Amino acid sequence: MVEFFISLLIASPRKESEIKPVILCAKKLGVQVKIKSGSHDYEGISFRSEFPFVMLDLSNLDDIKIDLKEGTVWVQAGATFGQLYYAIAKKSRVHGISGGVCFSAGTGGLISGGGLGTVMRKFGHAADNVVDARVMDVNGNILDRKTMKEDMFWAIIGGGGASFGVILAWKLKLVPVPEKVTVFTVYKKLESNQKLLQKWQNTSHQLPDGLFIRAVIQNNETGNDKSLLRTAATGLALKKNVANLPGLDQFCISMAGGQMSRLKFF
Image (cartoon, rainbow, N blue to C red; front, side, top):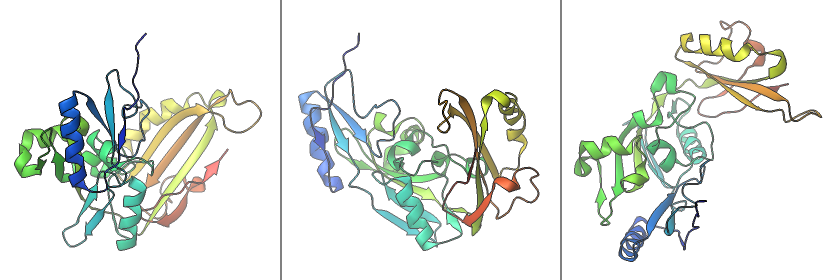
């Protein structure tokens, strides 16, 4: 049986300069550094290890700087996607980013892992929209895309940022979105809709790139028998109505671009 360690201590820097002593001290003591951004992690990689480690909690580093003229945003790795979406929506109703579905996910971790989201079919993964980054290496030096060289830059945008250093901030491209988009969630009992997943698999890749639909199998959260499985189809269309998408319009609502909501049908 594998024995796992919990963190020896948790360091929560309030500015980037406070990270360097943590790295150098851990290096001297021979312990690992585990980095937590938004803590949205099914495997709990930032919370446990087979080796002694220190947790570096970046949640205090959540500064966001938006440049609409350049069409970019700098976001520190401790910011969540919810914070980032909200900051962009306050500045513009026609700009967004390719990011995660869950607003609680941290930008530092999700982008360094690729970043799946609802506009990826049109604009690519979150990592595809990174134009620069700031990283602290094992010696405490701060590097940008130019000084880290292209090989390392390529590695951190999808290869797992914590494997190569501490991601301090990302510079992302803003993407154009309409003022209103359409979102929907449709729930179906799996027992009477066995062919639903097959239909989704056969047709979803043929849909316009401005339409995203994902299918999830989960426990039935309603009713008396919670052991039943159901399929949830969640979608987003980069338009304010879906009149030309037969069968979907009754499940959809229109709302401001850059934000997300769900209408549930059981």
